[in-house]
Length: 361
Image 1 (cartoon, rainbow, N blue to C red):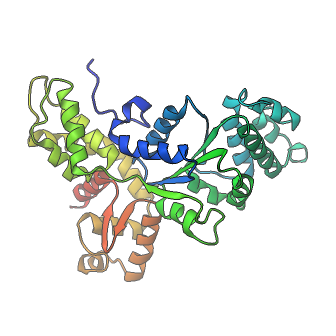
Image 2: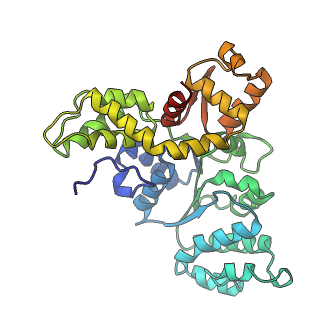
């Protein structure tokens, strides 16, 4: 079976991250210069793929520790995730991470067993996290280390965790490279720009932006040509329909490509039919997602999908009050479902936009 030149299922392997080469080059430079960096962007904007590529590029010169804080629930949860992050680098350093952990009676990779013991026998997870961070700092004195924290916005779910992390690492930013990423743009902005937050003004903020039209054209044309096909003029249509959304660009390009035989040229009709395929495939998931929103958020999404004002006549006709619209808009922007640029609102996922238009007319 011929492999598609437009992979889009899950985070991609480093060798498949070509469309994000400029972003990856920028992140590698910042991390190499030990500039604490936070990568911001909505879900499915290629952040994890970019982080993986950065880790791969740096693998010959530094040791990377990958910590995922998605839906972090408690101090015990944080301790368990740090344990899993440190276990793969047990042999790193002199003394090694394993040796440092053994001195503190923390056998790497086994912490989950300890945390499942009865409450009176269970170790204090806050003290464990402090020890784990101390181990990381000590190991960095003999081995360059980069700590990659994905979905960093999850840390707000554990009171005091961000403060402890900053206290442990703030004097070691030259030994430990720090690279954060998060899918809730407003929360990430708050963590680094709010004076009340421990990491205030501690990081360069880099945004994972949608692809521009030139990038989409380059991606689409090269993918078609590499497999003996011609993209014709469809790259403009793909860019327009997707708004440059990285995941949706690759998904729609793949759907168009699958309709074009080797030696043939793609047409706008192929784009139309491919979009039908993409919306149909995503429909069940989008319906579940839409149903999970409170009524006020559903109405705001419907209004925005029709390119109407959330304080206008169409919103009124749906029973959306001004106060309800304002509240729902703020929540949708905070969670990365809406993008606000000046007075303009757009739904981040163009396929969700298309599904709403088709579902509600």
